[in-house]
Amino acid sequence: MQFGAEYGDYNFVALIEESGSHMTHWWRAMDSNFRFRPTVPVSWAYNPGYAHVQNEHVWQTAWADIMQHGRRSQDAADEAFKRVEEIFAKYPISQT
Image (cartoon, rainbow, N blue to C red; front, side):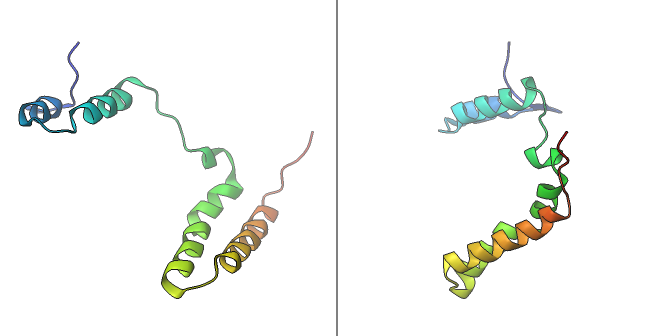
């Protein structure tokens, strides 16, 4: 079986192997992972609350506040957790 992502006349694995690149083994692994394994949805696809958190970029905003504005990490984390709790309160999980 030949590995390689065939797009038109291009076989990228063959091109990388011919170039002697150090990326050959990485490309083979990535190629086989993408072509021969099932597609799996991201974990927050099953939880509307966490999908909302991801769409608002709550954690990324906290990181940006730390890096760009010199905010204390504890304060940024506290604010992020507070926002996550507010969002999760909108999506209660019923217990059966």
